[in-house]
Amino acid sequence: MRTEPLPSPAHATVTPHGAQRGAFASITTLFFAWGFITVTVDPLIAAMKSIFQLSYAEVMLTQFAFFMAYGVISLPAAALLKRLGYARSILTALGIMIAGCLWVPCATAIGTFAQVLVALFIIASGITILQVAANPLAAALGPPERSHFRLTLSQAFNSLGTAIAPYLASSVLLAGGIFTLHAGPITAAQRMTSLHHIDVAFLAVAALIALLALFITSVRGKLRLPQSTPQHDSVHAHAHASAPASGALREALRSRWAVLGAAAIFLYVGAEVSIGSAMAIFLHRPDVFDIPLEQAGKWVSLYWGGAMVGRFIGSGLLRRLRAPVLLAGTAAIAAALCLTVSHAPGALAGWAALAVGLFNSIMFPVIFTLTLERSSASNAATSGLLCMAIVGGAVLPVIVGQVADATGLRSAYLVPMLAYLCICAFAIGAIRSDRLAPARGEL
Image (cartoon, rainbow, N blue to C red; front, side, top):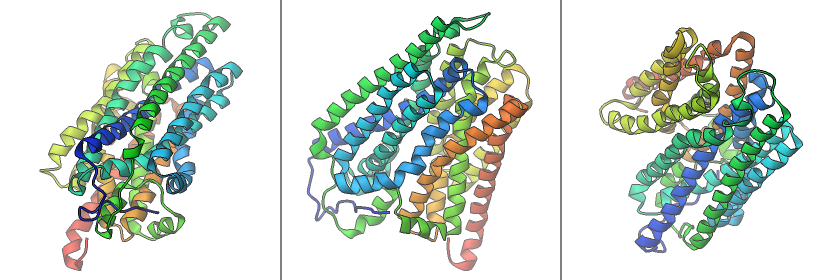
């Protein structure tokens, strides 16, 4: 993976602190934006299932189309970043996201689910490019010793976007039209109303992204990394972890811990996305909360909000507990909650499903750092492979949908349960490697 070093205090072009803060604020809004858009797909899934009368496996193709962009676009995004630089890459990404949002009304006018999938892939492609450019900038806009703080703060705003998106999106996507129907067949007028609500939601998102693009244009001169010295390469390699070059990818695949960490990230993202994708439909069921679909969609905010709160709690716990121990515990609890969902009656199953979000919270960063510490490959190669493993969000939801069609939605929660058990095994392996390390003089 190509990386650019962070600025050295002795050799960097100095940017005024106020300008750096303004640039960092603009980058942080990008984190919020892509978090908001990514989780807007959750209530969209519930809407698509009802509007197009889809099976669970069919409707989960929405997540397949969205998250597959991470696997397809990551490497081209790195090349684009090298060619255009940070500011123009970010603006290009925002333009692609706007194009995807504008394709949604075309897709609903055609009236085919396949065209909605095309629109989602376009949007996610823009988000992928955005992440490739924004992650290193968030880490680099300021003193190197505070890079982890800046990246964590930006990720907190990303979590804020994921927490509020389901509530706001459900108010539009799952209101009126076919969702006011209590009995009888769906009429053409009701279907058109629901499709129009989808158009309104994505046109509004396109307008907000356009405003954000104007803001980024106004500060684009500050969105660049100054010249630097090699001493900060390792820090920036950790931050710029979104798209490995093919050589670095081969290097990572030769490391046992890099491969194990990538598998853990693959399973974690797949489990988290699968549960969030089915949440509104699950809470809406008569044998769970038995609430209107719009209200159920709003309750999905509790799932993602739990993840945001859990990150703050987890930050405190990580000061007292070893990271692999905390990961093993949270993964085991998440697995137990999924088992509860599959067997518990009534509202207990709904609360158990929502509670999984709280225990998801620390998994991604802890898996990421545990893998970097143990991998025999470079930070750049290892972190690139880990970020490509986010494609698990495309694969596991489809498997969950197939299981739900075959055995029921409750039983489908056994799929993320197995994923969390594998993550628990990964954490236990990390604990064992720490115990063996002194004897062999290595991590």
